[in-house]
Amino acid sequence: MKFSTKTIHAGQRADKATGAVVVPIYQTSTYKQDELNVHKGFEYSRTGNPTRQALEECLAALEDGRFGLAFSSGLAAEHAVLSTLKPGDHVIAAEDMYGGTYRLFEQVFKPFGLRFSYVGGSVRDFENAITAETKLFWIESPTNPLLRIADISAVSAIAHGKNIKVVVDNTFASPYFQQPLALGADLVVHSTTKYIGGHSDIVGGALIVNDEAWHDRLKFLQNAVGAIPGAFDSWLALRGLKTLSVRMKQHEENAHKIAEFLENHPSVTQVYYPGLSSDRFHLLAKQQMNGFGGMVSFKLKNGDEKSVNYFLKNLKIISLAESLGGVESLICYPAAMTHGSIPEKKRNAIGVSNDLVRLSAGIENVEDLIEDLAQSLDYFEKELR
Image 1 (cartoon, one colour):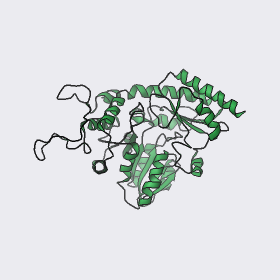
Image 2 (image 1 turned 135 degrees about the vertical axis):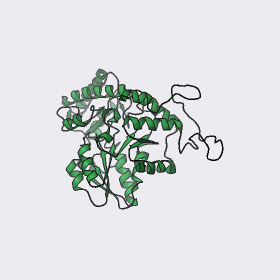
Image 3 (image 1 turned 45 degrees about the horizontal axis):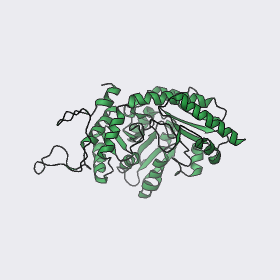
Image 4 (image 1 turned 60 degrees about the vertical axis):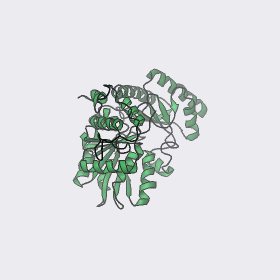
């Protein structure tokens, strides 16, 4: 099946009891057994639920993977991955990363003995940081919030030569634009809250993996820890997936036009969007992705928290809010919002400075979005005078 057909049919079968073509919401905590150890494949909904199973099968199919596992959030999914390691194990991560992931690394797992190194993101950066204890490479591509692109194939080749596994957070691209397993990665992470759900009405996460032993360990942790999505959230994610293809096309089209507008605006000093031919990651993104996504980050001239707030608070259509990937356009200030848990000195060194803004382009009419940005940038300019 082609991708858009998979979003509608993979893992989703007509209900045997009624013939319903939409997977039901199996809103139950437990399941009747015929006798001891004789049941219909489900015993307790923490361990397995038919609605969640349909979501997991669909996500695995979209990433061309063997196994999918759904979690209650993206961070819960990441927690499960890190829980497969032991004290003393070493993780190398690209330094431009989601602040919540950095917090999970530094404040949850580092005290338990895991070791983390943060590198620039090039193949050589990862290779030079390898130690005898290195077990994982952790990559976001595109990164949050600077939209840097990692050469997943090259990094994976280096890792596998040293018996190191590669984890790729594919949230920003979605499986529509990128399939990391096909590029050599060992495991894919998603925050299903974002493009997969697509409507800003769920919180969820997922892992997709090919290695059966690793899947079995992660499946054990999913059940033992219990950080699973409920049936309704699973159903909402499935509902969102059905329109993933059409939504992602519009997200990208809008983001590209917005990036071009911002690139030529006098109040904007830098635009981060791999779809721009001027972007330093454009050629790599073009090589390993099927498109460039719906996220745009940019820096405002003479921007700091106070002056950037002039711009943010005057937007009329675009909402100032955490998160991304919904049908509505959202904008955030990473230094104080998504990346507030990263120390200021480290944030500035990475490039997540006080003049940076991150925009999730929705699927509204792009002319309305550009007009909204233009009028608010005019307001920003006047306030700076």
